Length: 224
Ligand SMILES: C[S@@+](CC[C@H](N)C(=O)[O-])C[C@H]1O[C@@H](n2cnc3c(N)ncnc32)[C@H](O)[C@@H]1O
Image (cartoon, rainbow, N blue to C red; front, side, top):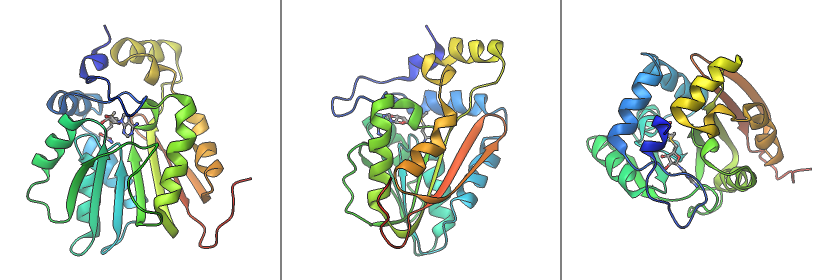
């Protein structure tokens, strides 16, 4: 069985996504997988999100809250960072890790049906979550991120970029399962554009992340 699959939790009945069920195991697995670059990569993602002190940030599929905590620091002292994830166990774990961080909170929630009101965040971020969703659910998740982002607000979505070599992909598949091995990362910027975001930018971060940034137009422009 792929190692990554051991980290999956019980099925969450309000989402078709694959929830993570073991916060501590996930932390260990991810730390190893980033090969010492995790902190640098997530600090860069926080910077690329464009979040500023005082902003309200939402982190969708926050897991143990690694990015959420960096976002909370970026928007301190008056801003807030809320992380949502369907897995109770990782939400509890995230709360414990952020207990001393003002303005950093966590709730149970799913990407395809966010509980937040329209236009309630200045910045929406999401890392390594989209590949957990079935392909048919991904546009809904991006549409929800658009809905809760205020006009003029910013989006940053990052996800796993599979290796180009077949052997590399095979090793990823053996370690984590097919969702990461075959992750259609080249579709990510199209999903962001189709949701209505403009000024879309794309970049890669080593060892294996791609990020896409966008802006919700100040005036509503319906997706084509
Ligand atoms: C690989 S983890 C990434 C966690 C964190 N964002 C990070 O970068 O470390 C993917 C997360 O997506 C969550 N997830 C799965 N289905 C989801 C859904 N429908 N909505 C929101 N999050 C979901 C999982 O529970 C898991 O915590």
